Length: 360
Ligand code: 13P
Ligand code: SF4
Image 1 (cartoon, rainbow, N blue to C red):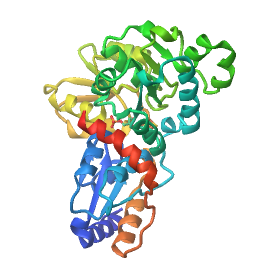
Image 2: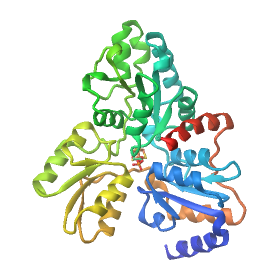
Image 3: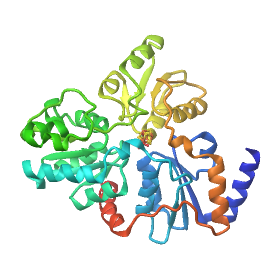
Image 4: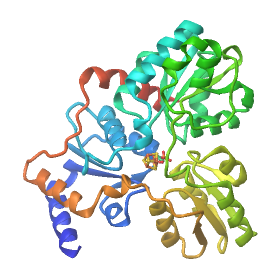
């Protein structure tokens, strides 16, 4: 590890201001040490869009984040990802073909001009482009409510993908009644029974919601994050029993019952701020990825920070010091490995959707 530290430092100083390393909050501690900027997925996309001097941006996070940085970076800037296999299973739950099929089916049963697509940042560049091309925008967990406002100023229904839980939790915060929220498959089956079979290929992973399309305001894609759906209301109950005076904060990718049983929910950056603002001696139970919770434990020795349960994102964990060393040493030698490429046409439409988010 000492040798890796030394070699990364040497390569980094050789590259100087030509290189910027961005790190998501879920990265391992040893990786974060080398990040010039640390943040949530919204903050890092904004930072990527503001880099003026850097020729190279190395993104330590999962692939969709590096793609978003590439789309938002200047045309001459090159973006690299230390491990191209570090993807996000939730992002892969909404494939372009399936979303396009749903859109076409939806257009047959409702006025599609009044439907605004919103893609969570956790999507491929192609889906971001789909949103840009169809009058929609991107959101992250830190600006989803504003994105909903933006959409309702322009349409009557929101088609939100891929995270059912963030969609549902945001809709509730906006005061949208439960009966007006539906899973896409259910709406389709209800409105056009004969078409139900063809479009219900995506697996239904949630209970009830079965609203007639006319009254539906939010159409949700049935995607989920396995790291956050691991947390249950029972974990929250047990934490309250063990720490009666605690505050519990979770990420809005958690199931609705977990969010409702907790005191707060926020993006990763929001969780960091919540813990930092808590009084000395407070017990804060945190329901999100374990590497972030571990860091919060070390950074807040005057508080009792406790994980709601241990849940690790195996993809975020893939990025190692060895990867960073290989990456920066290659760049210092003028070798471009693991470059993130987004085709121009995709990038152009995806940028429209991302810019709308940044404006909102
Ligand atoms: P944030 O936008 O809160 O950083 O979340 C990203 C993510 O992937 C959470 O699982
Ligand atoms: Fe994807 Fe979940 Fe990992 Fe976030 S924590 S990158 S949503 S799998």
